[in-house]
Image 1 (spheres, helix red, strand yellow):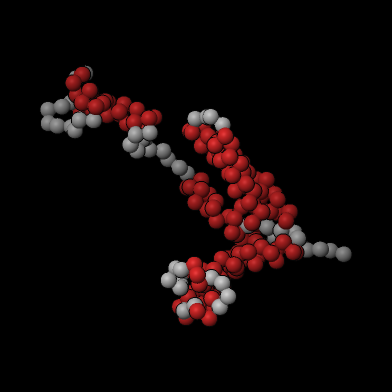
Image 2 (cartoon, rainbow, N blue to C red):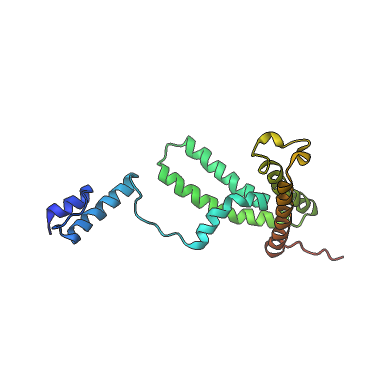
Length: 192
């Protein structure tokens, strides 16, 4: 083993002609591992399964589609953040425990959403909550992005393109959410 090539890889010196590639790569692997542990550089690559990655991306949107489920997850997240700020623990441990708790909060949140979905008033309020998003987009995003456009008279000041995009978004959100409701949280028929 060439100690000089190993140390060159470990110290981050670029590979050059005449070096032993295996020894250099062994040293470079040690450097990447140390940098990853210390939080320097990119660190070792970690594979994330597709389903987990999708859940991570979709989790913030759950609040807008299923309020009880989303509030359960976000309530757990808020509790984890509050505890993390109060306790003197390593940040890595806090992140790991927080991730596990937020994933675990999905299951009681799902149960609560299923129970709440059986109430007609909740379904009505949930539909209004869902449709408020496209209406806000219609009034806010398509009027130069200024917050002052939200309020009384915003519909009369909205552009034609904004109204059309908002109407299309309302239809899409309504259609997709009704499909999701029938799939995940169907309302039971009441038999007399």
